[in-house]
Image (cartoon, rainbow, N blue to C red; front, side, top):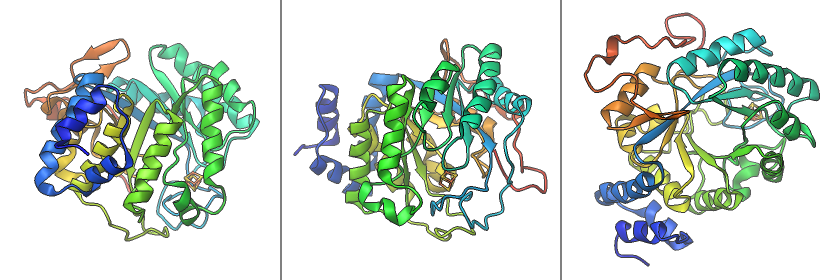
Length: 360
Ligand code: SF4
């Protein structure tokens, strides 16, 4: 095995491959070993990403009304969660929302739509939005997340200027039927393959805290390693009221760090994003997680409120990191001077201060 997490970091820095036993040791480690684990994972993070944090911004193009039954999702069939529901945003609305994230420092915009997968007309619609976005912000990466892809759709997205495609594996193959019955794990793997074959940068990750065992979690992480995704978002279950997983609180902040460290050790040079639910599950350990993960979503999520975008930027700066700009690293907007609170990053936070349900 290995004597310390730093030995394991040495192994991975030398190009090693994390074994199942080593993964288990990470997940089963004690709270008294947590700082050593984070420090060792931080060596991998620094070796591949230095002190940069990639900032991503979500735009929910189409919200709710989904015919699929993913148990974790507030937009699922039969969901009673109080979320905004709408069909496609107009291109100008999408452009305006994307621009607010870009102004706040996002180098990637993630265009997301609920549903099983896009029609060809939907792909055309997104292609038009992307053309406009790229014209206005040529330096910004665009990731599409539209569900399961049919043959040829990934190529059309690529031709339209889309850079990346997100489709999460979410959990292990053996656990998949417990979280969704309207599509299966193999469908998801196929879509990531189609994106990759079309030359789109594959983004695929997890939702943790859904009752998966440690072995299932390791299966899922190793499957992502096998998939060779360029970026891995790790979502921490937000147990929406009105969904089957309502009331499911299985994570602790320390265990969230162990999970992030597991992914970092398994895939040392892959972009690792602390994604939805980080605020409610990592809580006060979020800045520590930046020493393991090198990417986050700014501000709100698809159907729920995140912490204020300014608080995200302050956290990045306070922890000694810089926001990765498309053309290279630049200082985070706020600096460490304590003046950030009044800096007023102009970013829309739908739901905050209104009677509307939070939404992205
Ligand atoms: S995760 Fe996607 S496919 Fe599943 S219910 Fe939610 S919007 Fe629909």
